[in-house]
Length: 189
View (cartoon, rainbow, N blue to C red):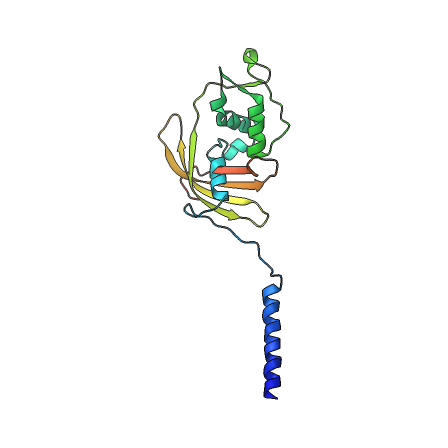
């Protein structure tokens, strides 16, 4: 009788263990938080995008603001005061998900078909570091960064930024920036 009980108990224990091992587990969507030192494929991708982005705060409110960001992001392609439209269009699509754009031309007699005129102006640079990446429930990612803002007419200022990235299969990066806000009063996000 004891032997029979031991065999039944062993069989039952095996069934329970096997069901635990092979049963499909319910996996909660993880919240991924990434420090600067951790290896992660998203943090470097987001930093790359942010360090090539020039649109912040209300710069996301108008097409003109985003176009100005695209011009600044492509200054290395400027020749004789112009950047080919295709580069600006590609930048807008890859960084912000804006496709099928036409440009209002207010360059007057400086207009050149197929090109965007680069207005002479000073501009601000941004250097993002130390990302903290959090995956949101809707599949977007919130990224907090330390940022050094180098205005053309003042000393650099250290502050923080919060940026929302959304997956986008049409972007060369796999993501687009929905918004990026830089703290203007030295408060940390």
